[in-house]
Structures are given as C-alpha cells and as structure tokens.
Length: 335
Image (tube, rainbow, N blue to C red; front, side, top):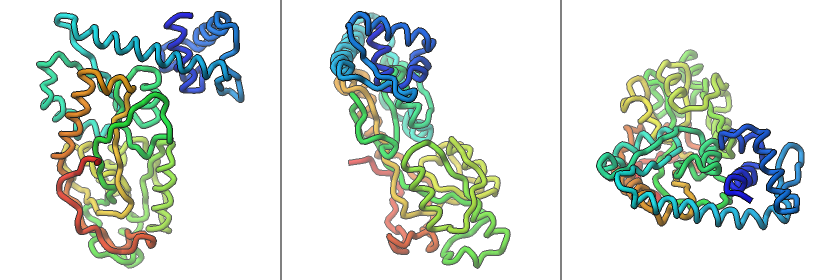
C-alpha cells in the first residue's frame, strides 16, 4: 500500500468516478484503474463496487476511507508545518471559488495580510461550485469559496467557515425604468419584450431550480434567451439591452467596478451565503487560518453597488409586496 494509491483511492471515493478522479489528479484513467487494482490486491479485498458507471465503496472500502483520510491529513499537516521552517521558502495557498467573491475580497485580503511581504503566494482558480468541490477533493485547492446553497448537506472531511452574504438583485438595462412598476403588461411592447427576456444560470444545483421558480412567479410570461455559466457574461447581455437577470449583488465587481447601462433592483429572493470550505487541518495551520480570518474581516467593509427599491411586480406573493427599504449600503458578514 502506497501513499500514491491512497490519494487515488480517496479521490475515487469522493468523486465516485474513475474518469473524474483521473482528471482532477492529472492521471490517465487506465493508470487510476491499475493503481486501484494493485491496492485491492495488497489489501486482499474489494474496495469498490462498480454500479452503473459509478464507484461505490464496499464495507471494506469504508474502513479504508477513514484511515486514508487520517493518514493523508496528517501528511498534509506535517508538510505544511515543515515548510514553515524552510528558509526563504514561499507558502503557496491554492484558492478556488466564485469569481465575484474572489474579485470583491481577495485583493483587499492580500493587501491587509501583507501577502507580498509575508512569504505567501496565492494560486487562484475562478470556477463554478462543482469544479471547486472537485478541486478540493483532489487536493488541487486548499480553500474553496462557494455559496452554501450549492453544497450538499454533508461534505466529507471539510470545515465550513462563514465569510460573507450578499442579496440577490434584479439586473435590468438602465433604459428600462421599473421604479414603482405594478404590471409589466403596462409597458410599451418593446420594453415589455426586454423585461420578459431572461438570462439564466445552470450550475447544476438546487438553487438553479429555485431561481427558475422565482422567474415563473414574478414574470410568468418570460422566455429564456440565454443560458450562462458566468455572471459576467449575463451582465454583458443586460448591458447590451438584451434582457434581464437575477444575480447576487457582488457580481457588480465583475464589470470593472461600474454599472453603466445597468440598474439593480432589490428583490425578496434572499441572499447568497458564501463560505470558505477547507480540510479540517487547515483551520489550525498558518497561513490558511490567518487568510480565512482576514477574509472575514475584509467582508465587513465591502460596499454594495447602488440598488434601487424593489419594484412592486418583483414581490413574490408568499412574501408580500413590501419593498426592502432597509437594504444597507455596506454588506454584512455571516454571523
């Protein structure tokens, strides 16, 4: 039994796929299969059942999983601790996460932390939630910044640290004045067409379904004109006057810090709760512990973009039609 085999075993166990594990580890799929076969031979038992192209742990595999997690966690902690004693060695922190959160928080966090002078080097990957989780499982990222709504109820071996929350807003072309609008059908035909042209996201999460239900409630006559994987692309469509979009307020950081051509309106859809996801041992180790703490501190001073009061037609029936007049100008960290 080798550490290389244990890393492969852990990746397959967490991703339930030989192909995905190989991709995340940078190893060819046949090599993954060969190493698993050697591991099963050395342990004298089957560790996985192959069920409809998914790798399901056997009882023996579940036992090995607990030990593999412990062994690799201890190894990572030892390596991180030893690096601190290496003279002149720079600590690389690999961060994967939502581009809007990274752009809003990371520059200020690194400046406050003094990263350029503290021997810290960051390797940043902007990625959707599913890819962030894959990178964490494959140990290609130390910290993931991800919306809590995108996570399953249990994430094996990871600690969640609340970072920031930002409200969902309704982005519309600035030429489309929605202030006080009760009935979208009262708009001129061309403006009504733009209002009912929606840009939606497909991150493969339950929240995607909730967004679709929200559109169906507030704009029952809407039609989807584009499916996007990034908020930046959606905002470019809105700015071009092609349609509207529901998105988190911090996405305004994706468009060079200004909202020319776009207006944001308050909604009652709730907030996006962003958490830092990381292996348990990193919560005790430097510089990971200080970086996450600084992320939390910086989040208290991030300002929201200008947000118009909620147009009456945007209020969902279950929550009434009262506008959110108490929307604060400064974003709040999660308690």
